[in-house]
Length: 145
Picture 1: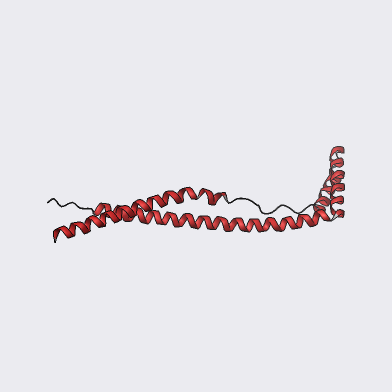
Picture 2 (picture 1 turned 120 degrees about the horizontal axis):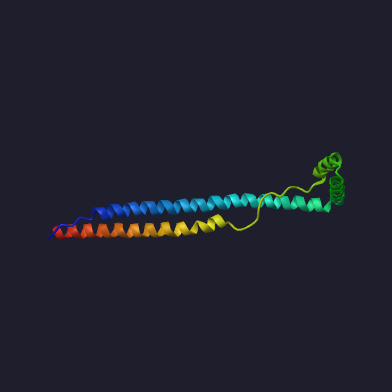
């Protein structure tokens, strides 16, 4: 009976399993990290929304902002750069709060599903190769006894 080795299949199975499981873990870590980052941005957006609502409720600030904006536009049209610069400074005092944060879907986590599935398939094929090589080795050892 001819002796056939299956060491290469075992090594390939181990290698594919390790790479596949490592890739799956890396993708899962990336999903959680991107979701955590998006949660922080959502919290910032929520705070900005509250600030914006408070700004819109303050009729004095909104009226003064509109007034200074109109005066600045008039000054720019007449060519009075000094008055336009002064109005621009006044606009900053009455301006609405700058937007912070975002609200939305975690697209990075969705795109990480593709490599997650691919690494899962690689790990599965590696496990199949490893199990097959171990069964062949076990069967070969049983035949020699």
